[in-house]
Image (cartoon, rainbow, N blue to C red; front, side, top):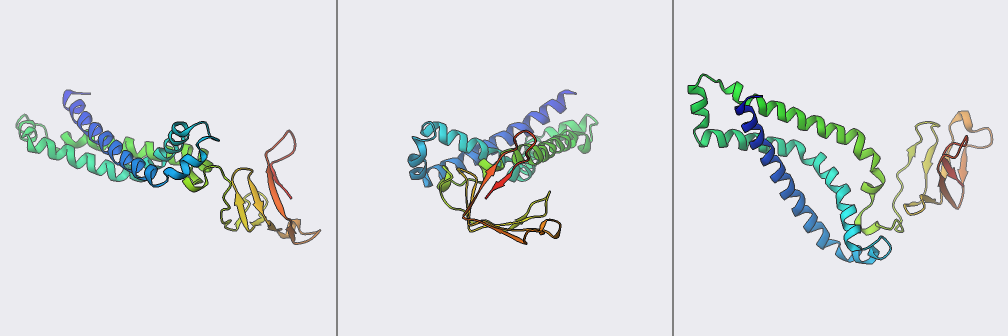
Length: 210
């Protein structure tokens, strides 16, 4: 890696990090003050206000990066090229026999790296934190009923329906499960007052206990 490459990459990533921290910080401040009452309500049960807010917005920062990485990459690339041209550095480099494409090549490589990081985050980190990311500040304890959108279980093709879900106990209120033809020998529908999710244990697979 040559000096020009390190210089361009430093400008690019400095701009990217500054823009990300600024936008993410603005979002955190606005959202925290908007939902401060909810954080105060749940702070005692979640280890304190700072711990609760820090954990909540740490997960949110991952999602914020995924949603803004494309825009921030464009802004950082445009700012880097504009900075080089404004200070006549592009003219000096071209006078030395370096083409424009050679100058912007590190920027293209950096944009590819950011894109790969965003894809990795989307495929690995966000699915792992999906439960935390699904919780709104109004439901930090998981004690507020949430609407359940009917969906099929990928393994059994059972249609999972219900009146509401509660995140604290992974509970479905008034569940109504529609069974596929392969499982409907004892009836096409399972109905109960509530369904509690039981994680896998030994040879027993995970599922809902109704």
